[in-house]
Every structure is written in C-alpha cells, then in structure tokens.
Image (cartoon, rainbow, N blue to C red; front, side, top):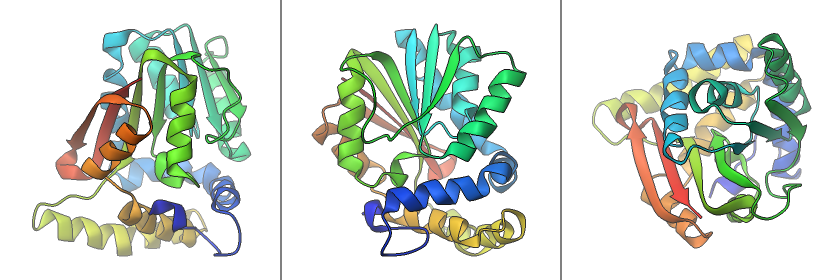
Length: 242
C-alpha cells in the first residue's frame, strides 16, 4: 500500500517526510507540474472540478490544496461562496496565498495549515470536498477518507483526482519508462530534490488505483462511487456521495 512508501527514510513518519518534501519543492512545484505533464494537469483539474457542478456547492473543502491551483480554478468554474484549502506544507501554502492575493480572491479562498487525517472542522460542514494528487500521500489512507466523510454534509460530493496506471500497450511501457527514468532526472536538475520525483513514481505504483480505490471509498462511507480514467489512464477522477 502507498502508506508504506516514503520519500526519504524508513525511520521517520510518512507525514513528516511529505511535509518536508513539499516544503523543499514548493518554489518549483507549479512550473514542474506544467512541464512534466505537458500541461495536461491543467485539463485534468478542470475536468475534476466540473464533476461538482451538478450539486452547485457553496462551501467547499480542498484537501492537500498545495499551491491552491484547484481552489482558484473552482472560483471560476463553480462560483462558490467559500473555499477552505488545507495542507501540511507551510511553503506550499505560502505560494498559494501569494497567488490568491494576486488574483484578489482573499474574500473567497482561505488557506490553513491542517492535517488531512485530523481535520479541524465540525461534522457535516462542507457541500463538497476535493483532493487533487494528494490521497496517495496520506499516512493512513482509510483514516483520511473517513475523516473527509465526517466533515462532508449528507448528500455532499467528494472528488478525488489522482495518478493511475495505464494498461494499453505500448503506451503503458512508454509511460512507465518516462515516469521512472526521465521524470526524476528532470526533477533532479530543477527542484534539487531528486528523491521527491523518485517517490512520485513509487507512490503511484503502490497506490490502489481504479476499482481498488473505489473499494476503499465504499469501505469508508461513500456511495454511488465512480472512476473515470483520463488520458489513456495516466490519471483518474473518482467521485462519491456521502
């Protein structure tokens, strides 16, 4: 399981290492996302956000918000009254706050340092919850999924966007070669933290994607769960209802 894959050391907790890793790469995170995904990450986020349109959420929680790309795009596509973004990386949040201030969205988006597995909110608080490329970093996946279910209102919707593994030959082989060999090399010379991109490959391989993650959603309290693969299975959108 992805809980056992860590960026740096077996001895330290995964949670602490994830915070350290994202603090290290925060200044380079946005540009590397665009370059390494050939800007597909922008399209993936938009498609994930659009799955929430049908419920017209007014109060949204964006977990593992990072530099707030999803939260900012939600303002444009969903027109909510309030978005709260949480993350354990202080440096990622600082980059996000600068972007929010520049776009003058401070009155709608609030970023807080918080642990996805111990959310500082009351039960049944949010109309919708989003997590983009974050659940595979949870120290305890089931606990994190249950905690998000706790703060989601009955009838509320969760949207999880996460890397998955393509199955089509020869695309699968090309994708794995790029992910395992090329991507960490680029990361090494740009972010100065090659272990972060080695971890990316390892964590995606260990993550229970597709039907396996749908089962995790079912076991943690979500109904009507769906998985929609994107770009030949590189990424998937998962949705469920409380």
